[in-house]
Image (cartoon, rainbow, N blue to C red):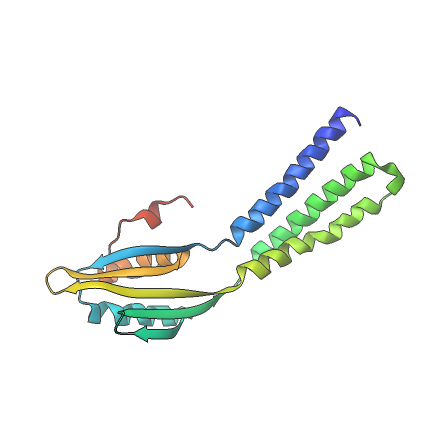
Length: 184
């Protein structure tokens, strides 16, 4: 095997490994817990949070006054654009691997290029793993007329960021701010 062909095979296999890790990262569960404080009483904050979540498609699932807990459920959909992109990347990567195999094993003819049909498999895997039921939990940690309310929110990271950006100024919500500063 010529050295150029060996390095091309290695790079093509690394491309496949990168695609696998990208698939895993794209469909990873990013549930996060954040403690949020506000100077407003819970009877003013919780209805606004509940209405906002229901407007975004979340359905109230459980209300437990003893545990001071509200739980909402929703189905998270996969991104169709990302599914198509991953299918294309999978097809290109499989095509590259097919070309390298064609050079390594010329007796196979053009058969290795048939690997291109495996490309859409990447998009299907992503869609299957990314579409799932998720929940949002709101738990009242403490409430005091003098200091306000403290809530513990457990939800997908993107939902918490949207909540903080949209309702933060309106309700006077503040947290440690890690969600908005994180590069991931």
